[in-house]
Image (cartoon, rainbow, N blue to C red; front, top):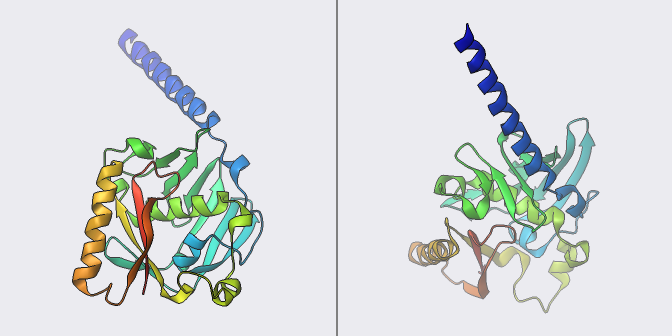
Length: 231
């Protein structure tokens, strides 16, 4: 009986410590304060737009705030084509979560470092030791929506303005991205180089030119890089 009582006490202590850790972690997040997107709009960031989105719908219910994109074209990630309109994310309890798979969620700490939760890994994105948690469309979608809803509204554009902007380096319908992912910044850059070369070798990049230099996606800790193309 004494052994059983001792075991129960130990379990209570461990659970209490775990809960304290979680509370400390959550208190360090301030994502709600950083969200700029409050209502539905057809003004989106150039990055979000060039992934295919032309509008983002914001709705609120008892579960939280829902964000859903309307998309006019697909993008390619990890060798497969996807549409942003196939995904809805929900902001609740300090995290953005995937509506169809709430095992995946993301938040931001005070230093703008993304904290991710996936079946393979939970922690700051630049500390992940599991490539499956990064080279995963669900994680990428969370990062993309995180960037979108926290971006300054003054830096956003709509499709009408994009199509009318004759000085743009490339038209909306002709801009695409190659995405590289890695556990470290050099690994992500190397993966991007592979994706770029694969696009060339496969013929997907025929008639295309790179737009500018590759760059890291904000909040990814350098683990996700993108290269824009004009085709």
